[in-house]
Image 1 (tube, protein in one colour):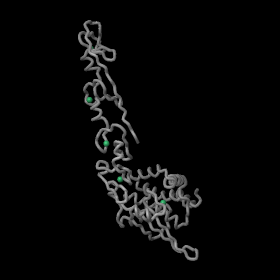
Image 2 (image 1 turned 120 degrees about the horizontal axis):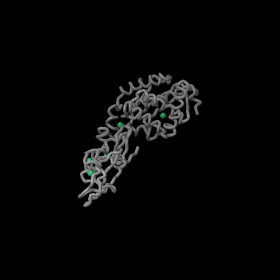
Image 3 (image 1 turned 135 degrees about the horizontal axis):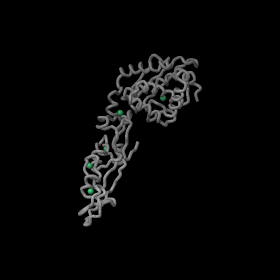
Image 4 (image 1 turned 180 degrees about the horizontal axis):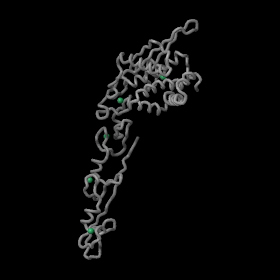
Length: 324
Ligand SMILES: [Zn+2]
Ligand SMILES: [Zn+2]
Ligand SMILES: [Zn+2]
Ligand SMILES: [Zn+2]
Ligand SMILES: [Zn+2]
């Protein structure tokens, strides 16, 4: 979102005049004026009446305002008072938010130009810096991850195994079962993932390699090996794992679907993980999936998610082969 603060400048014209006759009356107190007086916007005042009762005062410091000032929500401010005390401050550099600025999903507001200077976290979308994320890391494969996301980053086999049993149970609860007992999972960097997968795209976080052994034209065994990027935060790791397990479900059931139906269906696994977690981070990931315009991972997912909402898992799993 892009905002530009609205500054309104008002100018009061003050003139100091001198009256010798007593036929001029003060607009404020109604009494006749002799000696020096003020004319403001065509009206005459005793100087004291004007200064104490008519002149606009700053809603921040309560001192009178002469000349140019800022008005916001019907309140008046000296230009300095407005800039230093009323204007919101940038959450990155602390300076007042003048000019173009952004509000991110996490409630941070910052100058637009910081987006050119800083890297976005590949997981949560925050700009990586001391004030927003407590710093972050650049991974050797070109990814950036902030310190907040890095706290739960998945790098060891214990977390991989507990996540596998968690996601298996979650999917089985919705009818996605019959997956192989043993499913090897390897954590790899982006460079390796790119070389393993046949259809690599930059947004890819995981890939599953399927193979089948046949005898006399009959499949006698199937194998699937999951590869997932190392260093993903736990919830994202589980969402990617769920997506890949959905691929294995399709493979085990000989369901060869059109790419948008296939990736859309597999993303329903990620959706389940994020919905079950229900954290602010998961809601961010769900809204990113809903906003994605990719024909398979975005539009395909949105189509399948709607179908799931309308018809439920039972219908979806029974009719997968015929969905167009
Ligand atoms: Zn007066
Ligand atoms: Zn002031
Ligand atoms: Zn700033
Ligand atoms: Zn992050
Ligand atoms: Zn996929």
